[in-house]
Image 1 (cartoon, one colour):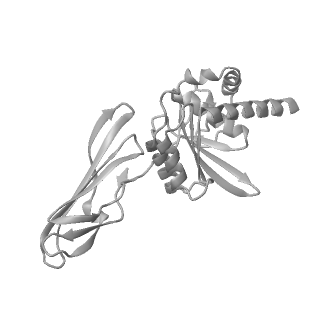
Image 2: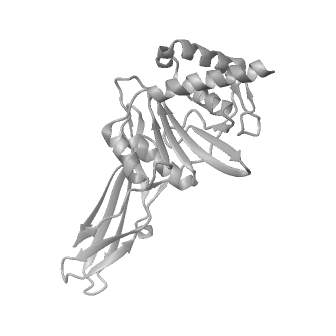
Image 3: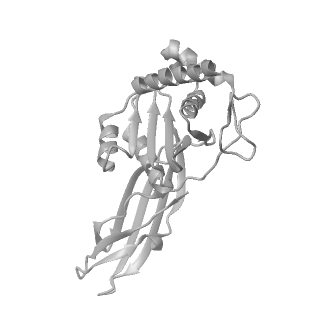
Length: 273
């Protein structure tokens, strides 16, 4: 789902009067969709015809935007006939549906039927954890969903309650991790990208995750990948957050450290029983 909010400022070409237009007046809607490598690119458009408040000159204002991949604003443009754009509308607002799923019987993780908190992580993911510890390159041979399950398992071993979103979602967050220390809850959004080292993670994924974090009011956003990040991606993460506490970008080196720590933690817990 998507919507447009805020205002744009325009200047009448006939009398030079400057005024604002509210985004709600444009009624932006999805108008097209095009299948691309990372899924569909969705196109949005909206327009409104108004008169200049001062000289009644007829003006038409239009807005176009696209979303690619799903959850990431790709571009936006504000145009006007009969007026000049002083400040256009910003990125379209993308809204995520809270869709969670229960694993089927063949899965390696199980969720309660009424959804959400994973309380029973079976041995399959633990075995994968140990295999990845011994042979990290296995990460590039498993499918992306297995990678998400592995990351969820790692967070659960460190005391988090974890949720996984539907496998069909793309962009925003794959895992929600909840922790409560001293009765104070914190919410982490985790997006997982199981990519080859030759395919770095671009800034569009960081933007999508940041948008989800702002919408859901999460304390922390984490993008975890088996690859690395482009300079633009790292720059966006640093520039967007006022401190280091809001967002973390974790590459393959970090994932290997997570696996090592989680495997040791799991072994220690089982030894004490």
